[in-house]
Length: 481
Image (cartoon, rainbow, N blue to C red; front, side, top):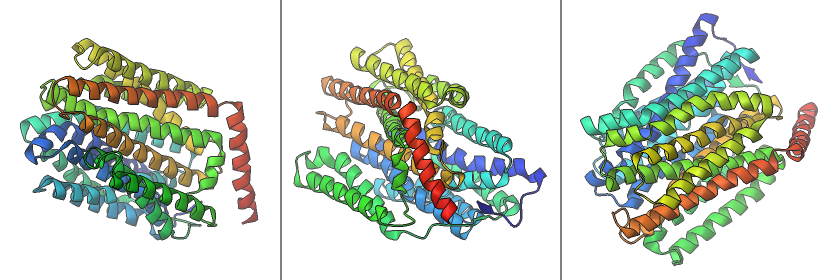
């Protein structure tokens, strides 16, 4: 339930939707654009593979850690206020990234950028839900929102490649500045303020445990090639991560209004959807990180040509997103996830078996299969987050699933990057790279199999029964409130 004392006039609704879409455009565009720029950043700032990983994962870790906090804070103090703050911080972070004098400063500014980004995605969706109160109207608005994500992924590699080749890697951050400023000015003028009637109490301890869990886990993986997989620092970080996770579970189960609602995981489809989200986006993050370095550093492609090679993937994601949404609405998430898991696994198998010197035609085929896999899975993952949940819990469930996406992508970058860095010579031509590349593709293949197996296991009749029981649990609490 939401309280909007000043509802938006009907003529302002399309503009409010456009403002929210501008915010997701710059956040989504940022990922694919930056991946194309990674080889140039490595050369210019003399970064190692681990340094390149941190430019991606520092952003993803902060973003994933703060999504739940940003959503609950917006419900409490005002969605427009937090949305404007997010736009301001993200725009400032982008500007600072463009002038970063060293890798350390770039990583720090990326973390600032992510803090702003965490206030945009969940809050913008809340604004859309508050503005479009009719069910069909809201569904169309969210469809437009999802389409913008596809457009940003599709256009990011080409825009990024053109900017890197024509101006330099710093220009990939400039594109966020005018869009962010325009969205900020328009939001101040046209987006009405809204709050939740009932908000959850702050949970600083839970928030700190989430941050500590993710940071120690990703640090252990990324730095393991340097510190040694069996070294005391690596083992200590893994142990700290497990301790934080155990502490988080115990603490959140004891709270009446937890930051992370663990009872959602009593629903097999929700648990399965979370595992699928981590696996699918780990494959996506690992693929983007590895493949961009491969095309530019190994194949010797320019940034623009490397971006063009990713078009089959981006195009398939863009086209199949709505198809998957329609299939999910008619048949449920299992068929889409099955197709997605099979396509992702086949693509990884193609590269793992035929090595790193595939002709262009097979590269396009493999990239297209990856796009089919990811395009078919995205709508299904979103559906499993809210399907069968009471409406009052849909926002919290969606935010939790959004967090698992970011966690998965961060882990994918960390795991694949560490495999590449552990190979003798790292990102260099030769047998060492070929061996590391094959290992990376086999890891992505395993992620695809996990998607397939989990979808087939948790999203049948048994899974629907557990989801119904979970919904009854929350429904009973609502009746008592």
